[in-house]
Length: 304
Image (cartoon, rainbow, N blue to C red; front, top):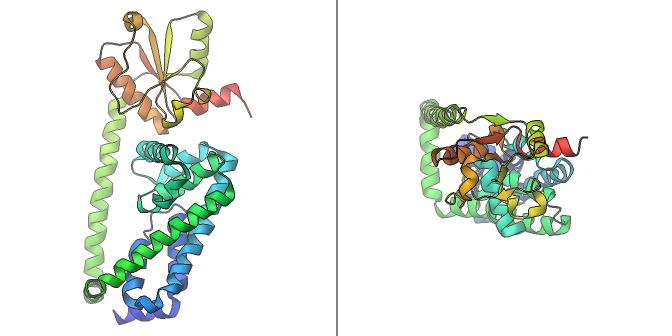
């Protein structure tokens, strides 16, 4: 523990800054444990340096995500979620949270795994004024970093005991932690693989085919399962907004003979395929997932 304490005393601010910056940049390198350790070892009188370091790192990384969100829009959400083990829910849940409570999501998003970078991207994507974004982000960063330091200070004896154990059985403890993490990642990856495999049976329809169907006058229903689909202006023309978590919408009697196309804004059309599978099981066999989702439609209508 003395080595860890000495390291934090000499380079504590820089270590915290680097750890928080890397985490807020989107890499799966948790910074909260480092802040808890800093809070336990430094004592209340030494919290200012790590608190400021963590806050500055948050503001720097979040500003970059905000600017990128304004420039690249929804395409960036998929890129950010590439590191997530649940890419589809990563996007869907963050969008739902931000669209429900707006910029106030920045006050709590750092406590939710993977939501920090996504919420700042959403702030840029929705054109939240930068001063308003910065104010809420500053408060959120102070709360997040301060809570970790406070936890470390309140439970400093427990943290010190854990650090002593790690110092004594460091290699063995790290090996156990690595094994548990590997099992968790494997289980989540296997679960996602099974889900994608089960949803492969849902046929995909291209944007060109959908537009041709509409030109031919085919009876086609289009469902939008994106969280932001509540505003009609943001949908494919004629699309019906559907909540993926809600019961299936009531459809007209002739809907069983219609072609139903479902789209989302998520990797591998997972959300769209999930609703399409439910519709097929409910007796609507001509149900498709739109290949590429809303972004494919937007690229077709507004080519770069």
